[in-house]
Amino acid sequence: MGVLLITGGSRGIGAAVARRAAKLGHAVAVNYRADGDAAAAVVASVKQAGAEAAAFCADVAVEAEVQQLFQAVDREFGPLAALVNSAGINGGKASVADFDGEELSHLMAVNVVGTMLCCREAVRRMSTRSGGSGGVIVNVSSMAATIGGRPGSSHYAASKAAVDAFTVGLAREVGEQGIRVNAIRPGMTDTDMTDELRQDPALHRAIAGTIAMNRIAEVEEIAQPILWLLSDQASFVSGSCLDASGGGFMIGRP
Image 1 (cartoon, one colour):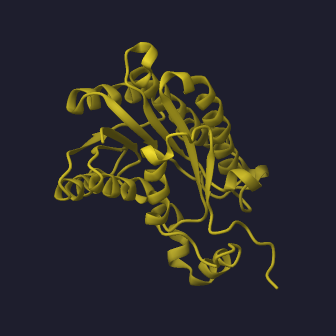
Image 2 (cartoon, rainbow, N blue to C red):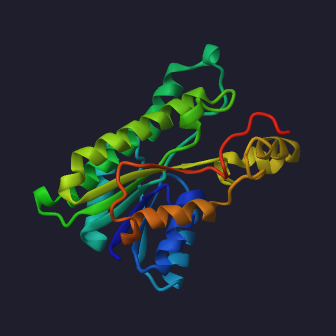
């Protein structure tokens, strides 16, 4: 199935993609920024499933580290076939009146610029115009991009809306170069990023009540459509933003 690099692959959606990719025969490169133990655990589970795997430390917000990441994957596994940009942060809750410029810059550096830089490196390797064999990119966005985010999350929503726009533009640019590019927009999902829901049952119920299916997603429910987008079953799907939203947002219930 080829070499798959997953940024933010040590936790949450990225880790779930890695485990499922192993069962499909991908060699999996697990990128992480800080939690080496978590990355090692994901690598171990991938190897247990019979696939090749290795962990690579890099901060996607730092251009030099992004370049070094892709070079390291080249050396370890050879030509890249697929990229999942799952690395991201939520920026914390903040009203617009309380925004901090440095924090906003860091949010955009991780969620937007990091995604763009990783796509740049992938395109340089995958493009048939530069001797590559083509490939597939999936960017992890969010349903927040479609509504401006929940209260206190407009900055996060803006970063993911940028990811959506970039995904569509990139797909048009590289379509003739053998590269498909899509985004997936998860609804609220049970990950470390949403740990507050695990700690507050009332908040969990309230958030679930705003979703048509009246529950939040499990990471496997997001990983599965990502693997579909990576597969040949989606061979004519490019430039799309796929909603994995449990039916979308509800404003009040009857």
